[in-house]
Length: 310
Image 1 (spheres, rainbow, N blue to C red):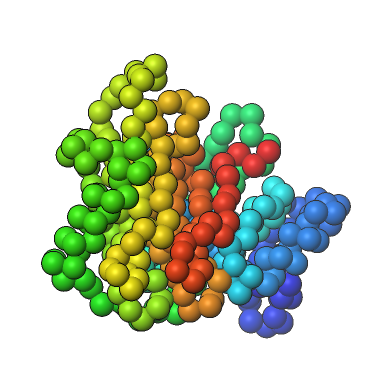
Image 2: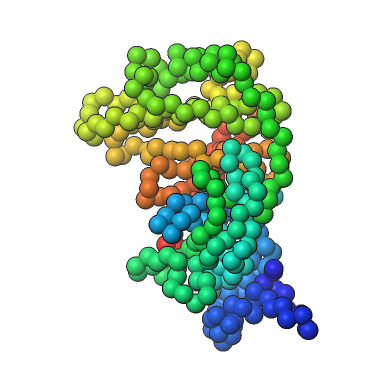
């Protein structure tokens, strides 16, 4: 329900705007110059992307961005705006739409919002003046992303045969990994995960291959082979070839390890983007958006978000 709606006479329905005034007081709301900006934004009911996090409260959803025709956009509100957001998006039994492997799953339900029923806040951060709210929801295991509204399904790409997949991986390990600093003889030390991602082309899927070295080594080690190696592979004229790669080493100055969150269409162009996050537990909301342009994957956006906004 949009924030700008008025109470409908005789129906008993009250707008989000009125509910916010009940919580915060009409004078407090009207005296806040930021409230006009935030309420206008929320009145447009933007589609919101949430990160699903396992916590002691259960699976919590935290808003990380707005998505739609304008792409992946930051969502930053003042305290009263986040209170209104909580009422609008985190009402008990509100539907949210989990995503897994590029597909929208059946709707899940919010079990409790950030400030439900006058109880103590669901979460708190000592000294934080503006906290990004969260909500507990019935999210299936393994889901890392959800949206406030269902997305248009993207036609799935045909799965590769075992032989095609094996050939693509062998090519990567023989030709690409050594260039990135991993000798073929060392690859057995790495764990490997392979994801087949629909790239929207209608042809063979993009392969997202992630190699992680579980070996713990001191930061002073002279062996600077990558601690993580990621390759996006796309089918081209002569088979699968790397169209984007990422490496990091075990030095504290190096880039952090990444994880695949999922792939979904964040800009309504009918083509899925790949979303990556950090494996760092202290930065669970960090998000990188990868978009396919021609025959390559490029970074289309990056957001460094934390629960404490200010």
